[in-house]
Amino acid sequence: MLAGSALGCGPVEYLSQVSGRAATAVADAKREGAAEWAPFEYVAANEYLHEAREAGGHAHYQDAIEYGHQAEVLATRARVLTSERRRSTLKPNEFDDPENKGKEQVSAPPADSSEPATPSEPAASGAKP
Image (cartoon, rainbow, N blue to C red; front, top):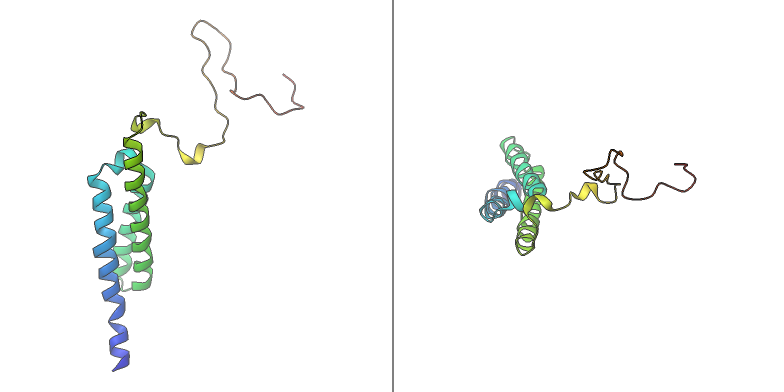
């Protein structure tokens, strides 16, 4: 009798997490404009939700639950970022890509100059011009 009730927990938790909480969080993020304002988090949340549904379809409920949880977390983060960014004066495409932070950026040369673009930060010491 105990084994029968334990087998039912995976599908029940799967439905609760994936079809309930995760799907709702992703739908809420979409409705609030996260695809435009927090595209990285929103796309990741969508992909995790897709993987969760696929794993559940193969009866891999633990994997599906974990993917569903990650989808919910990312969708919630996307909603928070969307809310914060909407209050900003920047446009959606002006927010920095988190993977590009700290990388050297090249500035465009002045319009009337024929000089090539130069890095916005000086070269490392020891390098000759």
